[in-house]
Structure formats: structure tokens, C-alpha cells
Image (cartoon, rainbow, N blue to C red; front, side):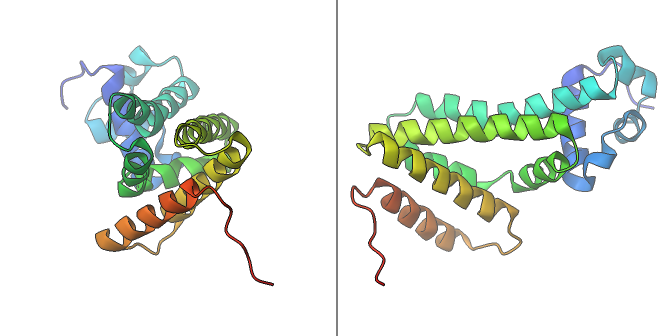
Length: 185
């Protein structure tokens, strides 16, 4: 057995890996303990129960997939909207898919996903308003951009790097355009 002096962060990281690899059913004390090479008792030293562990895993997902990204962008003088889209489309799709799949059957995960979606849309809206888009248009466009990200993330149809860059460029240009595209009837 490995060193039993793991902290809660190691358990949570192992939980995220297990979730991405095998789904929510892998988020059990025994399964994660085995992956870490420690006893189940170590788990209960850090978490009152599996539900508390799940809450910590979801909080870490939120931190990695939302809070850290926003924090990094806030310190940037570059085009934050485009950088945000590159970051979103560039990685984390396995864990995003796994958390969203988990949310279809678990209320705690559903609440976390809903809260993250609200914050993502709020941040996108703010960036669009700062770019000069009227508030009502910024709200709709922020939702559309989030849906595009989710569709891309949940799709098994992946693009090469150049195609991703083109999609992001076009998506950000569409979102920033001051006039709505007209549909011919």
C-alpha cells in the first residue's frame, strides 16, 4: 500500500480522474481508495460520507472549469472573449461530459451544473457588453455561445486545431456583430 497520508485534494483529484474515465459509479470510497493504493479508512478521515466527497469533487470541477479560467482572464489585457473561447474549446471535455452525464441522475450534480452554467453565461454576457453589445442582445448571444461550447464538448465529432480556430474566430465575430444576421425567407 502507498502512503496513507493523502490530503482531501488528492482524493478529489483521483475522484475527478475516476469520474472522467468511468463515470459517476466510480465515485465510491472503495474504488477511489483502490486507485490511490490506500485503505478506505483514509477516505473517511477526510470526508464524512460519500455525499461530502461528491460535493468536494463538484466544487473542484467548478474551480477548474470556471473560477480559475475567469481569474486568469481578469488579469489579461488581451481579447478575453476570444481567449475564453479558445480555453473552453481546447480542453476538459472528458470531465465536462462526465459531470453532465452524472447530472442527469443526481440532484447534487445537477445543481452544480446549473450553477456553473449561470455563471458562465453571466461572464460571457459581461464580456459581450464590454465589447459594446446591447444588454438584451448580449444575454441571448452569451447563451448561444455557451450552447455552442456544450455542443462541441458533448459531440464525439472532433475537429483539428485549425478548424477549431476558425470556428472560434467565426463564433466570436458573430457574437460581436452589432446587427443580427438576417434570414432570407
